[in-house]
Image (cartoon, rainbow over all chains, first blue to last red; front, side, top):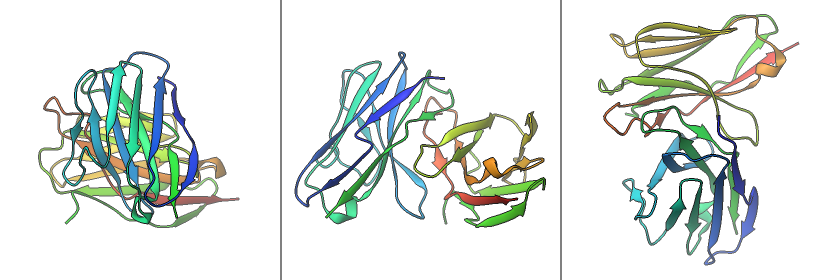
Length: 114
Length: 113
């Protein structure tokens, strides 16, 4: 399966700032997604990262808060903007080789907002 | 009601036991089911996936899906301390959006020596 690298692995940020998380895959993949994992809760899909076009956001998530880029088939970024303590969570990049293939996940970015 | 329900545990078993992990789901459109294992401070690791009702076996792991009762299970035979982790079930609809997974909250498993 694809090797997925996420950076940073963890960060502590101040309220009101922004953090950009990078996801790099070692092979081309069709599908890339961003998930959020909060303690005691299910993994929640934030958005589908579309190559060369705007991401597709799930209900409750908006582009102004979580801008996403995907310039090619191996790389994507998620920015968490104007952070508040409620944004403290684990953010996970996931990839699928094609549209209905099983997803593989990176190790996530542990974000703490103070 | 959550679309995928999973008992959070924790579940503690002795080494060598057979472990049964279970999820129920409410969306009849789900056609695609997965189990992930997540170690502390790591991302979810895909264990098994299946598209159909019935059993699928891979080594010590067996995934079982019963679409009539909307019930999915993962059995672990001869459990080992290295199996101690959180197990996540997930489901998806196969309509070109098959990658959009709906997850349970995860069951924490501890296998003790």
